[in-house]
View 1 (cartoon, rainbow, N blue to C red):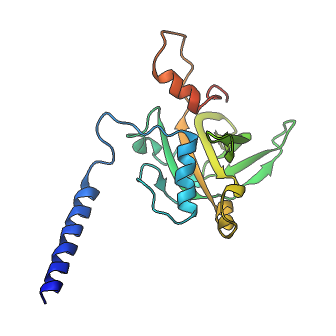
View 2: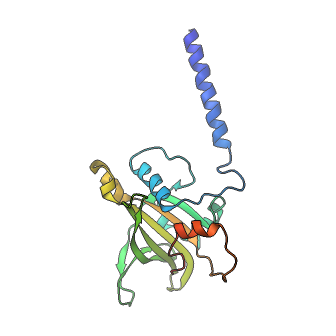
View 3: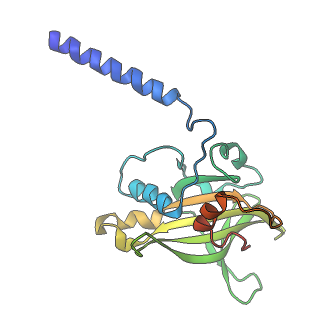
Length: 208
């Protein structure tokens, strides 16, 4: 009976700690989540392999790519990420090819009142050893009347060769997303120490 009481006390203590941790702020004031693509892929691979994520700063949510930026308030989820952006792990949305009257067909993902249009596909992401760990595809959100908006989405997919064969089916279904509002170009000014991180993370930030 004594052992049972000890075990019960330990379980209660564990539950109390978990409740306290759950009620803590997601991120300390003044700190921001600014992951490099390599860190994003670490989260994505853990999700694919069924490993617990280190934090909820990259949120797991199905159907993210089908949410309409003009209706869903992504802004409410920017609080702990810098430069008006949020990160998600989600299922891969259905997409289709769309000629669009241009010289090259593009891929689109339809939403309620518009669509995400592919802008740049399969940008290779390398780790520090020069290995391709995955790919990034960039999308721009367009209104139903085909007007462009300032909303951008980067879709990250894992390189199948880096994952055990028995988990590769999940690669086709699971992606990571960075959704953001494109910043207007700013005039050149004094050097800021944040510029190096920005250049490392987003070398093609100024592309549409």
